[in-house]
Length: 344
Image (cartoon, rainbow, N blue to C red):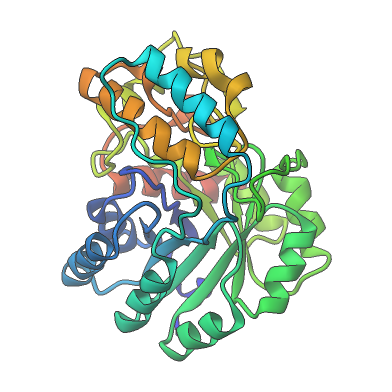
């Protein structure tokens, strides 16, 4: 079974759902000595299977697949309907579809898929798999990583029997991986959160959130992290599938800050403040993934038009440091900077 000690470079390319994490990016990072990732969230099992097979054909290195846990059923239908009506008024002619009571993102089918393909690393977001699922994935040889955002979640994950924890700080881009949708995520900075969790669990820890420099990586490794996970740092790489408008916004002087918003999905997520967030943040219901499915119509249209003000421009706090170029070059530069920081 894979372990984090097997990595030549203890850097994981974060699984970024919605198209940013591609098989090309996963292969490039793994071949360069890190751990590449596929994002299973929002994909059908068939598409995910095709991507796993694609990666397997092109690298013999370990790689990871991330799965979203099923969410609680819809609570406030009226609020979601009101939000849909608002979006419909703003986007005449758009079809927003039905509002579903629940959506499990094909979790059971995807668990069966990673088992059938003996995926080396499987990580989880928005909760924990069942005891039975953990046992079955372990029997297939998978190394399991649970994403946690608090000491309480870390203790639950350790008790569930996973092999490592991805400690996600509030600086991270995209969704905060809290176990519940309604609660507000903690604000303890990544370094402090890492130390707090290190004090109560014995599992290997992966630090994630706003990491963009070798100095940060060196500090986190010294503080007890076995590896670090970076997403925003790879958004402008050649292998990334983020839209050109998203990639360009990271260096566009019009976008000056990141904020945590529920406007796009109903869950707290960090992205560049744009017109959509400014207009809708206060009105978005705390319902995920129902709100996500509503706004994907708006986001798809904005992507077609190349309009960053209608996109979910997910990005961590260090977004201005995201480098362009091949992913192996970005990975190598970060690791060289880390080693220099250790020596200095």
